[in-house]
Image 1 (cartoon, rainbow, N blue to C red):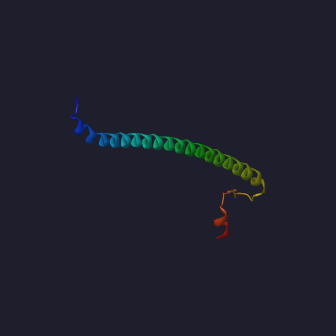
Image 2: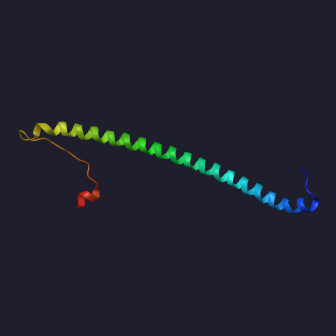
Image 3: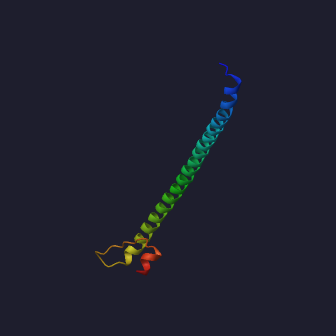
Amino acid sequence: MSFPSTEAAEQSPFVLRAERALQSLKQNVTDHVARESRLRRVYGEWQETWLSRAEQLRQQISELEARLAPWMPRGESVRLAVVSRNEEAN
């Protein structure tokens, strides 16, 4: 399909702007997908680290409870809990 020269000259800037806008949109989508992937990876690593540390703390608490149990009066049990500094102050 060919355009008369005046029509081609008038549409050329529009076509160029549309192509630039499309390229910009594609780049924005690509960048967004890359950022989302990085965020998911960082969050996943953080969550794994946190869960691992929480499990370590639970094990340490269980070990401490078992070590303290012989010194508790009969019928009493030891129950330890992790308390944040903010809760400790209250």
